[in-house]
Image (cartoon, rainbow over all chains, first blue to last red; front, side, top):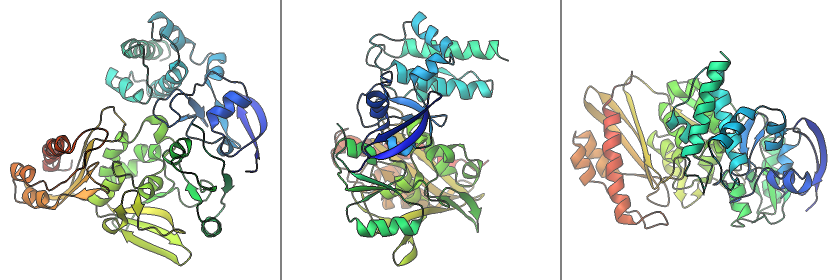
Length: 164
Length: 279
């Protein structure tokens, strides 16, 4: 099937590539752009390891096609990390041992930042239940989630205090 | 797994999408893609072409008019979840929204896609059935409106013709007397329900009438529990639970007996919600 040309912005940089329609966004990022921070887990939208941001909203990288991202702004864990946007969250994950094998971590961070960003806008500290609900679409098979919820909660509190 | 090869075409208008459906008999429409792309990845479905309808204008609005709430096919779950209009005038849909998938799924998934896909364990088809909603569709022969009770015909099977496209759904706007209830049981928040229940009724003090109990996850389509509805209108939740006339099949999640038990548990929870007057 004929490949299509797409142009988009990935982590702030313009990208133009020719892709097959069946190329999922996460495979495009990993295989064509060598951005391997986004992970491929279940490939049917259940595990959340491929979570990235498209036009500011988190999506499943395995449930969107690269051709659908023509003209879009995509941010991966590499971008979120390099910009410093989630530096505090990454530190909290490390300090609280909120990762073991690390496979789920890029998606977990992207999903957590989505909640924290929205909460910060309304100066709200989400409850542990709200954190769990927001991260319900991201599987972690190592930690048992407690440390992850601890880390996200700690950052939520710190951000509301430090940026009134 | 990876999808089998397919062609991709971005339709600019409904007419173009309808024509493409006519030319490519096994083409599929791509809206939010949150069910479709998963089935492509697993090769449960191998269409020759995907017709992307996301660029078609006029399908993304929400309006309150003539006592009804109309929601365009391409309204995404996240938009419905954050919509004040839907929260105020279509509270059952608002109540169901957080149960649908996870935030990353709701950012992409569309209401029209969910209805047209007609997963028997999905929330929205049951909400539409509970509210006596309507579905607007357009095809080669023009527009038509289909009642929810006639729309869901079998497992992933709807009244839509091969060249028809769902354009909007419509539900009666909430009134002072309108009561709603919603509950579901899932292993993980956001997963497809083991059993779920969407309900509506008219309430006058403590008395209920016009009770609609639409269960999902218990059959090939969302189903009304008619005998239980009648018992609820007679004022007895115990009788309603005893009268539950559902015949769920065993599935990967649990067996029929457990599902029937859980349907009763949900009915008691939803009955409490139905008894609460609208604030």
